[in-house]
Length: 308
Length: 278
Image 1 (cartoon, rainbow over the protein chains, first blue to last red):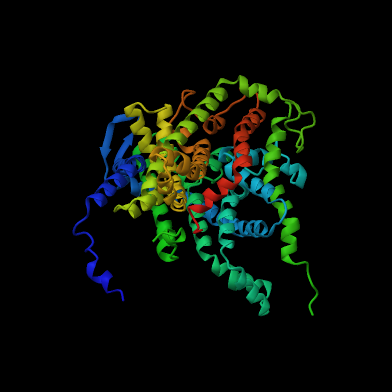
Image 2 (tube, rainbow over the protein chains, first blue to last red):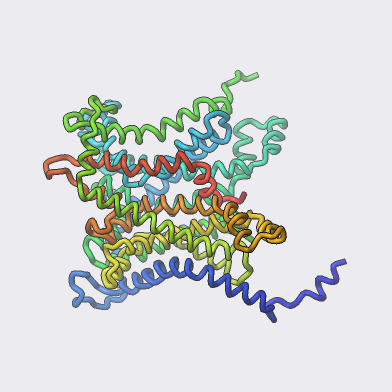
């Protein structure tokens, strides 16, 4: 039946028509500017960061630049501060992404079911997403501050200084992050919920499955792809946390994160060599997280959006 | 039979929406009320202002640091958005419509860059920009904004362009339209919503950016609002900047609220198109 396709199809790659060649050229011409803008600003500075990380180099003392091999990495990795910052960053990431997953799913369930006021809810859920992170951080900081805040007055915390010690400072930082980024999570989960076939849920209900069973056996497995993609994006984003920490504590009280350390070394201290080592290590950990998601959990971003 | 509890569905339909609106509204209302508090009331620990005043808004609009930052933020965000959308549209059209090797590579590169920790780059960029004279200029911020918004724009647009019925272009030409007419009257209206969505998301990114803003600028020449806010001090060094920062924060939130109110459907479509099939 399909003999024709096996005999007459030209072998791919051996010869292409002029038309196909022209299409290729046009395709590359159209993507080239975007590709150049993306790669030029990331690949070259990254390569330079790797190169700089092998030198002892401060901008204020260009003449004193000296090749030190991997010594900067040794300095960073043997420093207590680096590991304490890693722990802080991981803690913030795990707590915020975990809470966001639960709250985001509840929000998505509400939005999925709601009949009246869809527009109002969609508007209000998008506001935290669109608002400037620094602005959100200020709003939460002032709400919890001893002098200007209303939280202590409203809840009977009295003169409790939220930013005075590590645990409570981290709680406020995490709250602000959760408030700002849960909408993104819930919108991705809402799109996933919409893909769960309604007939499956009805069939499970007819068969006597409880609400909990329907949730864990039908709904969640059917939206696994959406959950994993949302988790991946949010984890990588949370791990880069910088703005909120900068505004709220400037890294005081043991709230410094890895990104903040990189910023402080490169920009504030202008120690480009050491700072670049921190930057490269930060980049490496982000790649590692992405690899764990893609290889370990099998997140296929291409398939998730309908690519071949 | 076990007693019937109110079903989750009913709770979700009635209480849920109220909770969501309260959750998002409280911090925003707090910021607004803080910005309306006068100097005597700023530390009164109340949620609502006792005697609302516009004084803080007058203060910020008289502060050069803020007005120049606002000008920079608007200008840089708009320029970056325009450039990014043009480049992304060209690339996404090629990816959606043309057959050429390396398509998948480009989408992968875009994805990798979307996940990039931007702070890793500020050190080298700081160094390079100072050498080539881009430090503390508009272009010095436009370029990194371009690079980091292109990935999302390309993903959103190529997913969107795939759904466009391109045959209609030929159909219009068969019906006697010139190629330019067919493009302008048929394709542009179909593609515009997607391009618009990409533009909104790009604008949000540039408007929100803080990392590049504080690292690659130093003066009112190019410093943007988020960066300026972090370095804001009171009119005198004895005056607390809290109320002024709140007022400035409200001012830069107004465009966000306006965009969300008008284009909410597009934003949702754009945010989810890149990540979930459909």
